[in-house]
Length: 112
Length: 112
Image (cartoon, rainbow over all chains, first blue to last red; front, side, top):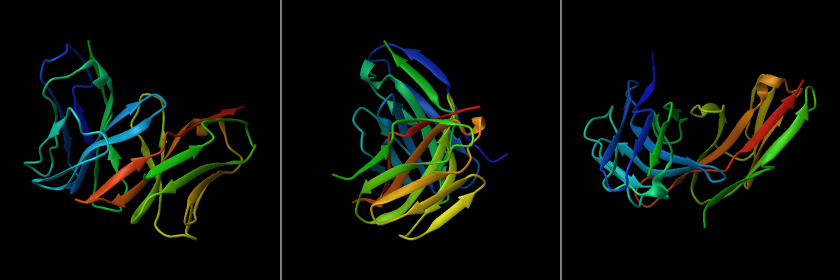
């Protein structure tokens, strides 16, 4: 089944404790992206990747890191999480620019 | 500043009462305009892609149209199962690649 998977689905952590949210797609897509969704603000793009080893900042990259060492994986790293990073996070993939994005199920992160 | 604005924020309809959702955008180098549907607790699901002014796409009770400054999602004779949040997004050329900007969404409630 074609899909985007994210892990974990739920995470409660404390300020400053490094964490990684994994994202994997099995559709051989080139474009991958991370978003956060907050009430009233909609989805905001954190980082995106056009292909392996190519990543670019979205609108809200501060406090996040990403890497794209393999085509299928695009992990999101929070080196020192803070409470303002409490949010619902979505990973998405797309065959390429100008194509629709396929979204994962989401990761609900709470930083205390 | 590049932005995507959706209106209304919320819309309540009776079953069978047709209406339209609006998405206005101010971006340069538009690569595509996308409509997604999002159910509570889930990731967005793709509905339509529009690429140029004058283009229209249709699927069941939904029809999307595009002008140079806005897009409309027309819902004809809606049913309760059409209740969801409808998201509009644009993909535009950025300095490094192509980023995606989402609107805040329109929450649609259809009452039987």
